[in-house]
Image 1 (tube, rainbow, N blue to C red):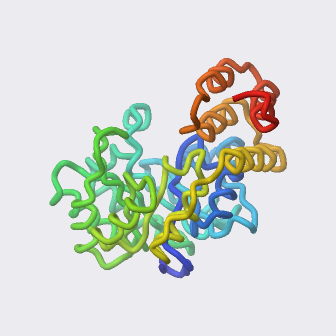
Image 2 (cartoon, rainbow, N blue to C red; image 1 turned 90 degrees about the vertical axis):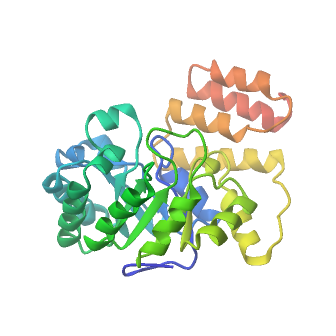
Image 3 (cartoon, rainbow, N blue to C red; image 1 turned 180 degrees about the horizontal axis):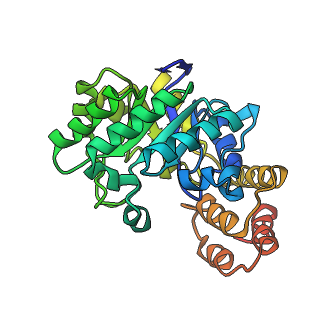
Length: 319
């Protein structure tokens, strides 16, 4: 799949997720077959102010390339300035505009999915950034209840110069509930000439195959299903290539992935209590008789307590 001048040797992408897709997690997903990974969404205003925490989100390494950095904002000039800063500082392989975040605080600031109510402004933002950058520009949007209006916005994005479009098939009002409308994604794919990537309700090999065949999209973007399960990229890739389903990962292998994640966090100095707690809980999902251990992690007060509990699982003293 090609996105502007970016050439990918596959079509499985890791979605940008706030509080999730830091560098260590992206590296794990890359290891298991994600062909393009994205940073957490980054506020354009914060980048212009050189906010340290926001700038750190763009930090990358050779092993995870190609990398997309996602920008959040609503002012075309500020977004263009921030995009140029990120391009010069981190040399991402593409920059993406967030048109889909449904969080109330984001919508309140007229960013994310709130921009879907202002198609002309979306066109202005996309055009401004494509004119300012050497890096390919993409956008990630949600759908509206009205398929025709959704397609109209998608065409505005294409006409303004975007190199590809990611479509999450839920409306902003749905949040992460209900089901993703793959029918609307399909209509957008049929109505555009740039690559369209489907996102939403891609949970495993069979849903991935169904979405790809039904929508005829150029690629798939996987988000929440990868949290605690980066191996999903290898499973889906193998199934799409061969039609065979790989054996389930053993619990020990899933724990190995968690400890590799923790080691990468230490290596890149991003080990954080809240993040490690979230990831530990997700790596334990679907394990039988694990509730007491998950509760123990939930009440853990520091990183050492979380790691001690996970070490206990690995040594067989817990669980």
